[in-house]
Image (cartoon, rainbow, N blue to C red; front, side, top):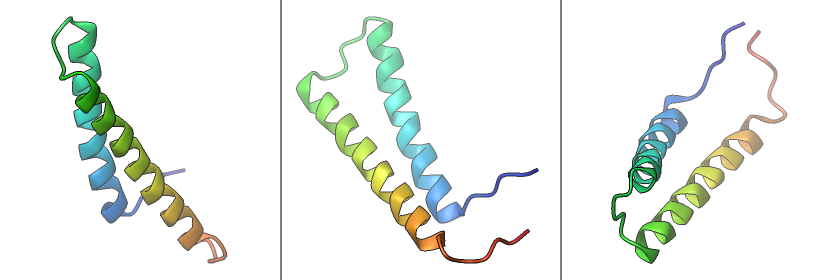
Length: 67
């Protein structure tokens, strides 16, 4: 069973998550990540990813499966 994902959704999600993981790992390693502005950016990024995913899910509901 192979999972499929539309590239218009997969690319922005992977790019956004790369930035978030970089900030989190930097914080764990003790680096200064920018304070409240960096945290606000992470929250907005996660909110954007959530909107993309919910939009994709609601768009594909009701369509027949490709299997």
